[in-house]
Image (tube, rainbow over all chains, first blue to last red):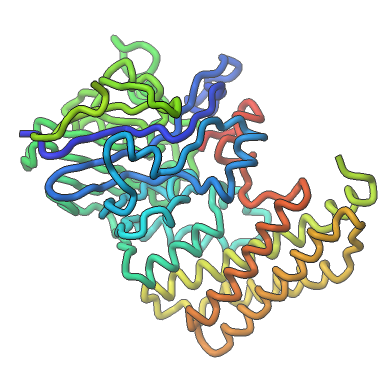
Length: 292
Length: 142
């Protein structure tokens, strides 16, 4: 059985992103397209997402004009391509608190948000440090923190402490502390709902940007190569990669990095009228293809 | 392009802007703790840090000399400081979230307006984080 339909939804992209920012050590080796995506999980009477993208109203102009981010479209237009409305989304798993992953909270008025408690508490701790430690605040938008306050007041914030199984049937949250950020998490979907699943997927947030992070440059001689940015340690990033790959039975392509453009070469996909890609990983019974 | 006097104003007030943003973030962080049920939030040492940082930023702001080009930015910065000051005052009676949140939101909104009014004021340190590598080869990914 296939319990959930799974889609990777592109909402913006950087056409020419330096490879050195994605794969440790790839200095002066050119650029590649860096798509910005979130994940939609639909089935069992629920619609869930992994991350929600950034708030264009607050950041769009700077990101477009200064950093080359192109083609941003709001969740309502992006999700429409698979027949989903933002208000229908019930559960959202935030892999980490960077503004391009949790900035669009306001667009999902009925969703409950899950985030590692350590991700929030360590950011708060970081804010108490003196100015010379400001690098540790990278990627954090104070406006997002204010939105989190609102979520908590509305009882729509769930602070997770470590791993949590079956947050929805067959969906598990896994802590990856002191890696890309203080309290990153990755999401496992056991798409047959079995305890020892043979149909698992991992949504890794920024714990891997590309498949090179998970299998190196030579597929016949794989190795883990760290991502370009870790607030925690690259050792922890590598050991988390091992955990993620093991949890999908060693099939690296079932670990889904949302910034990986080559998902299109592995799974059915199409380009929408807005020039954004929809990639279809799995279809639950009764769900029609959105890329056919 | 900005004239030399406005450029000097930008340099003069960048630190003030950063400090006000940091105070707003610190207060927001404490509200997250309070909203999540933490009993330590009301007596958190970061509250003292925020008050001290605000005092420094407010003193610096009073010394700033805006040009005509910078007037809108300065007005927003003053408004931000005023609202954040109100938010800080509200903390003296414990962390009553709603009473603090209203001026804090207004203060942060004013900071966002200030950032949009002149170059050189970033809401997020993009260059050191998200998309930074797209502008500065070798910097970091999101």
